[in-house]
Image (cartoon, rainbow, N blue to C red):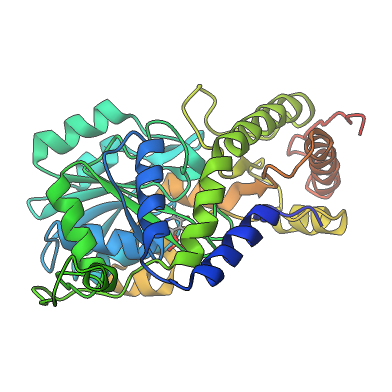
Length: 389
Ligand SMILES: Cc1ncc(COP(=O)(O)O)c(C=O)c1O
């Protein structure tokens, strides 16, 4: 099966894990600190804080900025549920914002402006599929209304500019991300004091860590605030250091594969809409396409699965989940809903060969012809040429 995403783990990761076993120091040690510093440097940031997941990092960033009950946070619904959940963790209210358009599934600035109220305190931008939003426009919006701008950069590890838009940014190292530590994440922040609050909240609100005490850098500890256990361990950091070094090469390969997809899909599947037609920086985390409106997506997915190709949907819109429907009934986001109904994510990961892209394009073209053959005659049939495999 050609999978939508696949982690790349090998001998270097094995050796790095073995070295942690040999050293015997297994959590919050030198490797975690080195990963923080290397990740910060790779993203043009002065420092970073490693956490147990991107979700945990989003929670900490909101807590560190004092978000709480009564506050509203503008979030896209075209995202993974964790973006909105993190707002609920601090007792604030997520307010869902539509996307810019079917070809630009990033949070709409005009809809955000329309949904802003006197209670709005923050905005969480999601770098959907790895694409960066317009930095200057969002910063101007946030500045004009005194809002905290947060980047959910789960899809954008290694992308120059990610982390440089908002007051804080959070990256994910989950197993399907551009680099992985199995579970894990990283927080960056513009204000060093805010980043230190994140660091403090990450480990129970304690004023010193075990390593500092053992090395004589601290005698004891106090607990000055209600914190959490969102620490990263040395095993994950060891893998992360290896993965971070390989990330630029992998992201370049993703870019080449995405460009090849664009060429072959435009040529062979003209009924398929390719989001992000304008050049825009991207980590190419996923490869979403928009199927023609009348096509039965589940049939296409089944067809591709039979041919050994996994596909996925990013995402079911968050405001339509029962939890959120019950909390805020009647939310309507027409563009998000249409995008969610028609989108299909094709396999995209650096293990893929060029011929995999050609094979997926051919299979999609054939699946579309087959499903189109079964829809009523008045609907135009999508013409898809076959590519040599
Ligand atoms: C956009 C987005 N935000 C947040 C998360 C949560 O990341 P994690 O699994 O590291 O908590 C994900 C993970 O898939 C994501 O895609």
